[in-house]
Length: 263
Image: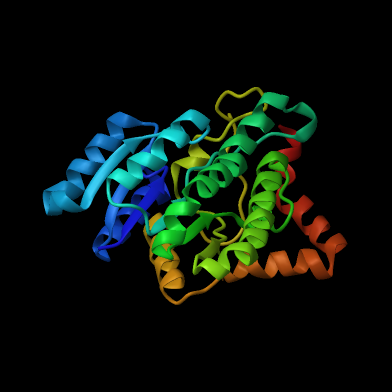
């Protein structure tokens, strides 16, 4: 039986990924810093098969917690798949945003998955396992009011594209998933310029997808050995437009996300 560790597993896409992994027969380790909700999620899965689910309270930005996690994983049967799902975003203009907000977004969205993946590499080498990173289409193209988030997700993609080439010789497969707009708490909990919850509604393009839909797409792509997943063709086209006609893309984005400039 293969074991998967999922960060940010108690809500949103993380919970959908946990349920999908469980349905596919994985032994699922749910990791989240919300231990109350985490316990409820574990109980829900344990009612179906208690031997295939466990949890770990985890702040992914805590280096000491990550260091302690690895021997715990070894003790509990190793690791076949790591899903770096935990994330945070902000909605605020760059000039108005406190540096602490940028630092927090970078810590959760880039530093944490990098640190956790590197720490887990010995286990993944042993199992010839894999890593799934939940990126964002915002990492492929600029979006007003998301300077920190775009930067973190762009850095995430670049890091793991390099790592892919370095670890493929060990049989480790890396999938980068690039969703666009999902109906999850990440946007509901977005930070404002001062680190408090953002007060204005998000702007968006394309369709709002469910986390369950995305979770199915992710595991299907991983099972097929794909390296990158662009599930939303509309936003994929927008990212291509950014590369081939960046000035046109900027004009269209300024029009679509004009309300962000008023915040």
